[in-house]
Length: 370
Image: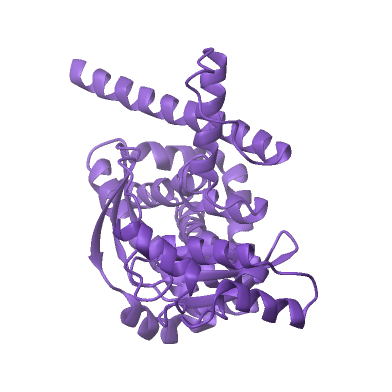
C-alpha cells in the first residue's frame, strides 16, 4: 500500500530531485544524455536530455499537466502529462526524488566477491602531486617508446627471455612470484586511481576481489569515471593499470637484456615479467572478463551493462534452442544489431569462463595426484 501511495504522489505532484545527486552531461551514440550519480548507494544512471529537462522542473507543487504545458510553450515539440508522469515514476522508483528512500540497493554477484580495505581518495590526491609529470605528453611518448623497445628485445634475445621466465619455476621462484604479484597489483590499482583523480573523478574504495570464484586480484573502484564527459578519458582510466604493468615489464626486460642475470636476480626479474606484462596481456586486457579490457570495450561499443545484457540475451537464446518457448522470457527488447553483438559476446564469455574453470580444475587435480 505504501509503495502505491508513493507512486501516486510522484505522479500527482512530483517531488524535487534529490539535492545530493551528481550530474554530468554526455553524448551517447550522438545523442545528449545526463549521467547521474546516487552518492548514497554508489549507483549511476543515464537519462536522456529530454527527460532531464522534465526532471529539473519537479518542485513538489506543480502537476504533470502544468509541467507539460510549460515545456510545450518553450518548445520545440510537444510534451504530454503522461511523459512527465513516466519520468516521475521512473525517478521515484530509482530513489532519485525527495529523500531517496526508494530504490533497491545494487546486487552483489557471487562471481565478483569484494572485500573493501581503504578509502584512498585523500592519499591519491597527495600522491598525484608527486607523479603529475608522468601524465605529460613527453612522458607518454617515452613510456610508449620503452614498451616498444622491450618488445623488440623479446624478439632479438628470445632465448634469454624464455630462460628468465623458466627460472621462476625453480627454487625460490614461486616466492618471488607471490611478492611480485602483490607489488605489481598494488601499482596497477594505484595507476587507475591516480589517473581517475587526474581527470577529475573521486576514488573512495580499494580492496580485494575474487573474480569468477577462482581469480584473486586487487581492485580500485573508479566508478566515478562514468561521470567524465569524454569517452576518451573514461578509456584512459581503464587502460592506466595496463600501461603501468607494461612500463614495469619493459624495465625488467631491458635489465634482463643488458645484465644477463643469473640466480636470485634472474628469478626476481622473471617473476616481475610474468606478473606484469604476461598477466596484463592475458587477463587484464581480456574483454571476456570484467576487468580493464571489458570496460574499454563497453566504452568503444557504447553499450553499458554489456555483461548483464549479454547474459539475458544468451538465456533467451538457450531457452529457444531447448524449445522452452512457453516458459522463456519475451524476446530481448534491443535493436537487432545490438542483439547480435550481445549474443556473440555472451557465448564467448560463457565459453571462456567454462574453459578457465576447467583448466583450474585440471591443474588442481594434477597437483593433488602429485
